[in-house]
Every structure is written in C-alpha cells, then in structure tokens.
Amino acid sequence: MKAKKKWIILIAIILLLIIAGLVAKNYFFSEKSKGVSAAPIQTMDLTKGTIINSITASGTIYSAKTMNVCSSVTYPVEEIRVNDGDKVKAGQIMAVLHTGSLSTDLDKAQLTLDAAERDLTSKSNDYENNKVLYEEGAVSLLDLNNSLNALENAKDTYHEAETNQNDLKKKLTDCNIVAPISGTVTESNAEVGLAPSGILFVVEDAGDLYVAAKVKEFSISKIKVGQEVQLKTNVTGNNSFKGTLSYISPKAVSDSSSTNVEFEIKVKISNPDPLMKIGMNAFLDIIVTSKDNVYSVSYDTVVTGKDGQSSVYALKDNTVIQVSVKTGIENDTNIEIIGEGLQDGMKIVTNPGSVIIGQKADIGTDQAAAGKIKAQRANNNQSQSSGTQTPPAETGTPPTRPETN
Image (cartoon, rainbow, N blue to C red; front, side, top):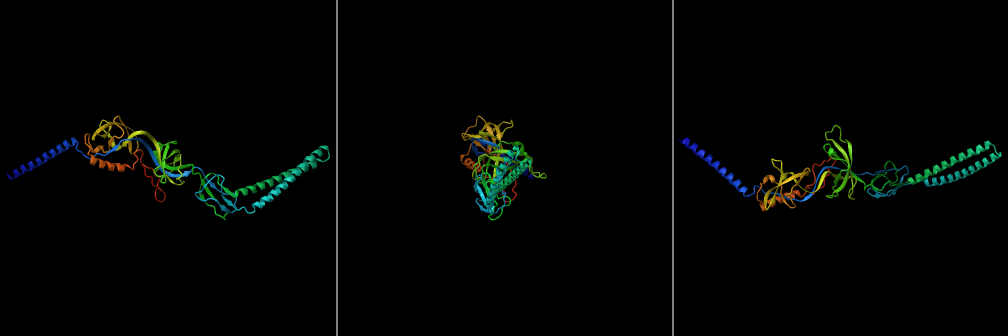
C-alpha cells in the first residue's frame, strides 16, 4: 500500500508540472500576441542611395611616362641643378658637365672649316675655268681631270671639317643634361666630380598616373577594359577618385606551380590628386554593376516566405508590420528592395528573425539597441562590396585600406 501511495504522489507531481508548463506556455504566447516584446526591435531609417557591386583589389601607383636620363659624353659632372622630388619642364637643364678643352677644340675646328671652305671655293673656280679652257683647246683633258679630282678632294676635306665641328658642337650641347619630359625627378644618381655612368636621373610624369594591381582568377570573367573604377589611398583618406580599367593581362602572372592564380590589371587615374605619389598603395573598387537612387538593406533584413515571396518588417504606429518587396541588384553585403509600401524614412526592422508581426516596440529598450547597431554601421558603406583581393606584401607591414564611410 505504501509503495502504491508513493507512485500516486509521484504521478500527481508530474501531472502538476506538465499542467504548469502548459499554462506558462499559453500565457507567454497570449502576452506575446498582445504586443509584449519578444526581443528588442532594431531598426534603420530607409533612405535611397547607390548600391554598387564591385571587385576590390590593391596595387601600386606608377607613371605611364617614365624617362631615364643618361649622358652620351663622359666629362665629369660640374654642377647639379635638381634634387629628388623636384618638378622639371621638358628641356630644363638638370646638370652641367665640365667641358674641358671642348671650347678650344671647337674654335680650332671652326678655323679648319673656314680654311676648307676657302680651299673648296678655290678648287671649284679652278675647275670651272679649266672647263672653259678645255673647250677652247687651251688645256688638256688631263689638266681638266686633275682640277676635277682636286675639287672632289676639297669637298671631302670640307665635309670632314664640317662633321668634326658638328660633333664638337653636339658634345658641348650634351654637356648640359636636360629633362626629356616634364615631370618629377624620382631618382638622382649624378655626383659632382664623377664622370656620368648609367642613369643620371629618372623623370616621371606625375600627371599621368596608373595603378598596377592583381585580381583573382575567379573575378577575371567579371571585368573588362573600360569599366569604371573608384580608388582611394591612405594619404587621401576617404576621398574617392575615378579611374578606368585600361589593361587586363591575357596571361596569369602567378607562378605556374602556385594555386593562387592572379592576373595583372592596370587602371588609369582620371583625376590624380597632388597628394598621390608614385609608388604609393592604392585601393580599387572595379564597378561591375551599380544602380542609383534605390533602397537597399542588408541580406539579413529581407525575409523569404515558403512561397518564395520576399518581404521586410517595418514599424507602423510603433507596431511591426510586414511589407512585400521584390529584390534587385546586390553585392556582398546589401541587396536592393523594391515595393509600393516602401517610403523614405520608414523604420525597417534589421533583426526580423527575433521579432513577430504585431509586436509593439519598447521605445526605450529598442532605441538603445538600435543606437548600438547604428554606431556599428557608421563605419560601413552599405553600397560597397567586400572581399578585398590584396596581394601579399613582400616585406614589412601590409598596406592598410583607408576606412570607408
């Protein structure tokens, strides 16, 4: 009897617990249906903007016009007139070589040329006179031919003297090392007192800048020459500059044994900033598709029903409602939404999985939660894609992409 009584008590306790659980469950859903918050509602203000689907990469700024300045003569450097970083104009003297005896040699060459010219004139006159005399029978054919040979020799002598003088003039001119193009001196190897050897200066046109970068194999089919590119640098901060994709390598530039296949690209910078320097890191967004004046939200904000219909949750009269939408262009983080029920300033619920339709917003709690979310989003650009393709740095610290709004 005692054992049977214990079983009855145990069964009664279990039944009471089950009933208590059912009551609590029914009360919870009853209160929830009345608008009691299941979770804080996080929202964003819906505004129109631009959504961009892009491929990102990083590279190095270089000049399309680069000239190495060398010397054709080996006289020692007497004066250097430019330094690294100086801007020069085409034809500007960058350095002067010591001319030595060139001026004296040039004076002597001029005297030799003058003498050769006088002798040429004399020999020419002799030949013309002999032609007349030969026709009159006053001189022999041998005399005529001798005067002709003397004239030809005088011509050769004159041409040699003229060539020698021109060579000396060129050497004297070449003692002035001039800039072949307008640009910036990016390298200087000249030293006073030393004869020129190899490259004296490098001049690059800082107004004609490009970016050399690499893209991954899986992105190469999405890009083509002529596509718009937006670029930034660390030194220019959040300012974005336009560029154009001008070259795509037809062959992978990575090692054949590497599984990390990449292709080289070149981007022409349309409006270089004076702060941009050759050799700086640049960060690229190659625009694959873009759309202006549209609504876009994060992927998590869009709810897809069993019937495949997309919708978003929004607040109306402080209550969660469902708004049917269609989706459009998308990138790695955001997706365009289209719907008649959407309007500027509408508060879109960004955590639809944690709330229910008809739920009332708890203004204090929800605003605090939304404030945190808003702060986290302040540094994210909802219209940009992610997935930066950054070639590994060979040495030192890898470049840092500038913060994006």
